[in-house]
Image (cartoon, rainbow, N blue to C red; front, side):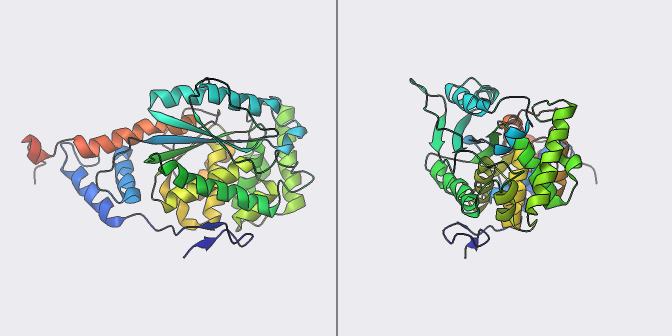
Length: 363
């Protein structure tokens, strides 16, 4: 039975999301304990290998087909001066993604990942550049950017449902060409303000605690961001238990699409590698819609944004990397693909004590 996305639209429903597979996890752990090493000596790589088995129901899973979904949208709250960059950068960076010139393109090439760019709600559509494209592009525009959350709800309830549904529908589309693991990425001037508002609404944390400098705003810019979050929460009072209500009142179109991707991947038992603060905010929305969804995600890294750690704590996720990243785009998530690959290869390719004729631990 499908779970309704909090009742706004009967067409938007989440497929059933089960739990991690205990049998596969036990088999993976048993093999890890027989490998030529002291038990637990590979630290969190062993934890990661067991988790991957639990998600996929395979005792020795492999992940040759990696994809990073970069969802992009504009935000009305950018008018409050919450970013160090003009709003036009959102669209300009989407063109950069399509040409293969952004950081996420470089890292994806290095780690054998495919980049999928989704227009979730740019102010104006992007015409893909002429000539060969280095990425896949999907037009899933819900609207021409969100409203300014300080004075109006970011989007209508129907648009919030449509954004999540777009992300849900994207996963089976990507599966048609092969999808073993998916990372979440984002682009949107003003979206750390939306992520801060979502995190504050769902966790109950104060706006100052969850709001950071984003693209590098100065002290006055940071104050404007905090005030924008405070104003939006006071005006709209989103229900922290209702992911669609939070998304509708203070969210972003790309955050809704990423939330849908997280839900769709969880239902399909595809591991999700979350990037930074925006992805964590999307995961909070997904968790509010379907509490089991977070079990199918890992946190690639801890970003420099203060709200990211608070969001991860609510999600129950412990980041694997801490590099001071705050770029977005899915860059941290793609870096963590290497850890996924390493964990799965160690589990499948390392010799056991018996296979290597190596003496095991003494009784």
